[in-house]
Image (cartoon, rainbow, N blue to C red; front, side, top):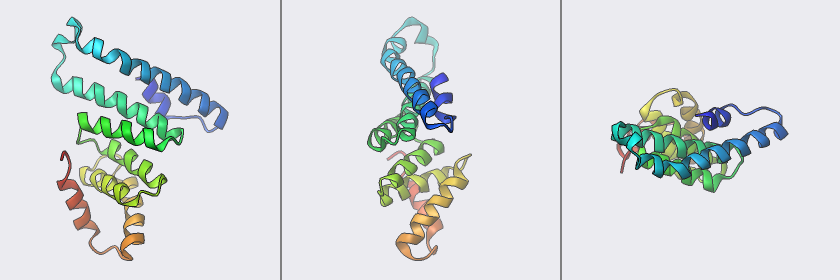
Amino acid sequence: MLSNVMAERPPSNEQEKDKQMKRAEELASQALTLLPTFLASPDAANVSAEAKKDLTSQLHYTLGLVYLQEKKFGPSEQELLTALNSKPNDPVTYYRLGIAYAQEKKDDPAMDALGKSVFLKGVSEAGARDILKQLYVQKNKSEEGLEDYIKSAGSKIGQ
């Protein structure tokens, strides 16, 4: 949890941000290393399968966000995709994935991820819609068909 807060709220000072992201990465990596041991322990016997998936997803999301903050886009994409394998209906993870793809000029995968984020609604919807609209208009020279694109992206969630 601490690593997630650290990744979500980085300092504006670059030197402090680098330091905080390094520590957040250490904490998230350590938690991921210990996760299989916890999940196999008697303590986890009463934890629901859904809660285990959420925990797994959250740890990979956090590491993906740390990598995104550090501009390590490939590793960020991999961690965010792994998070989505555990929890495929998370609009914020799709939003962050879309940003990672967009930073690498991977416009089609960025649009797909952002379209899924918009489709799922939530706190990331407005930001995802803004970036998606820019990419969509850049590619199609018009907003026409954007809503159909969002519905189509949404229909592919979990596939």
